[in-house]
Amino acid sequence: MPAPVRRDWYDTPLFYDIIFDADTVKEADFLEAVARLHGKTRGKAVLELACGSGRLIKELASRHWEAAGFDLNPEMLAFARQRLAASGIEALLWQDRMESFRVPRRRRFDLVHCLVSTFKYLLTEEDALGCLQGVAAVLKPGGLLVLGVHLTDASAARPTHERWVARRDGIEVVCNTRTWPPHSGTRLEPMRSRLRVTLADGRIEEQETQWEVRSYTAAHLRSLLRKSGEFEVLACHDFRHEIGETRRFNDEYSDLVLILGRR
Image (cartoon, rainbow, N blue to C red; front, side, top):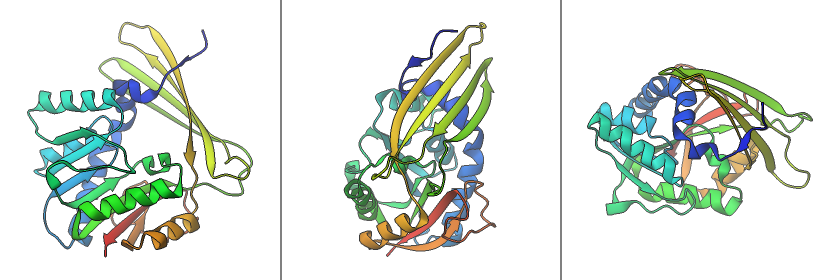
């Protein structure tokens, strides 16, 4: 086989969507449960940061939420718009950046979420704070931010590896992702994702994406929230998204989902 083609996996939204869509219903169930348990506004306006292929936008809109979302990648947005149009579902979508987004029509929300560690793409403290300040500005008083972050094991000396396999309409996607320890003197950790795609006609394509994300420990997150001053921690879960299972806000679990209330 030839070497994988270098390509941003966000430029191939179908393959990305096949990998991540398996958890869509469970994640939407979790978000609704969080809103019922912790929300004080009782409305159903929801904003997704970096909404990607639009899987959660569609799912929540189909449950009668006023759904909105933005993403930086135009291929992802085109895919999201097509899936909404095919289902006859309306939602507000636009292109924007997490650190400096502006919501059209001055809309306000009861719930904002970013579940799959996309927050780590904000590579500086300034950008991370900008995102939190932007969320606080568009949340109604008492509204919620649900933030999922994969924590970094500060003691790890070797890369970590995750593998997923998913299928849809005769297409199989195998995703292998490696994450290396942060560079010395920085909090930036290199990542590499390789997709091996077997198409319905039997052809095989391989692609590779390389990038860096900002590493976080629980202490880093606590410090960031203190600097922001916009939110209080209401609960902590993990990426299992079980509303009845809470976690402590520490480094015992690699994947944390914070339920944050706007002060």
